[in-house]
Length: 382
Image (cartoon, rainbow, N blue to C red):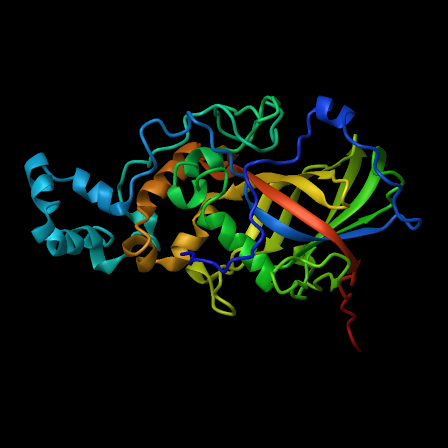
C-alpha cells in the first residue's frame, strides 16, 4: 500500500517520448557521443505509463471494496446502511468483506475469492510498445491500443486492467499514487536502476549498440529538492540476475533493444523484509525491450515494455494485505480477476490461461557515470 509522499519528487504527466516517424524527422540535431562510445544514465522515473483518455472509464472509476460490498445488498438495505447513524455498522460489515475462510484476507490471497472483474479501460489509446507484432503464438488474443502519436498494435493490457483504478489513473494529467510512489523509491535508493551504453557511434542512427540495464546498490545523488544531480557516479550491482545485457540500435534518435527477458530488483518500502509468498519481488519482463529517445538536454525518455506475471502487478496491494483492503479500499479479488481475464502472454499449454500481461512503463534517465563491475567468476580451489 502506498503512502503520501513528500513534495519535490519528480512527477511526470501523461506524455511520453514521441517515437513516430514524423516526430523523429522533426527532432533536433543531436550532439556526437563521447569519443569512447560509452554513455551512462540513472533512471529518475520508472512507473506505469499513464494516459488519461476521456473515453476510458465511461461508468466511472473501478469500485472500492466498500462500493462492491454495498452492491451485494438489497436496495432498501443499502439505503439503510448509508444513513449516518448506521455508519459504524456499515464500516464493520464492508471491512469484514475483505476476509474469507480461516481469516484469509482478500489482498494477500485474492485468488481464493470469487469476485467479478473490476471496471477496465474502454478507450482505444494508451502508451506502450507493440510487443507481439500483431500475432504472438505464445499469447492470448486481445484488443490492441493505438499510441497517442498514432502507432497501431500497442500491447499494454496492464493499463487496460488497471487504468480505471484511482491510485493508478490520477487526475489532470498526473499519475496517481502508484506513479509518485515508484518515483520516490528511486529517489530513496530502494531499487536504483542504471543504464550503460557502449559502442555508440551516433545518437541519431547506429545499428549496433550494447546496452547494460541493471540495478545499482548506490543511492541516488539528489539535491535538497530531491532532484537527481546529473553526472554522479554509480556502480552496477554484482548480482548477475539483475545485470541485463541487451542488443540495441539507435534509429532516428531513439534507442531500441531487441526482445529479451529483463529482470531487475524491485522493493515496495519493505527494506530487508520478505515480499509476498516468501519471495522478493522483481521487475520481471519477458520479451522486454526499451524504446528511449535521446533528448536535447542529454536525458533519455520513453517506454520500457514486456510481459509481467500478473501477481507482480499486485505486489503493492499484496504486501499491504489487510490494510490495502480496509484502509486503501482495494478490492484485490476484483483486480486479480481483471488481470487474469486480460492476461495476454505466456499461455499455459494445459489450461490455455495466460500467466503474464503486457505492460508499458514510462521511463526517464539522466546522464551519469556508470561503472560496470562484471559478475565474479567462482574458481574451485583444490
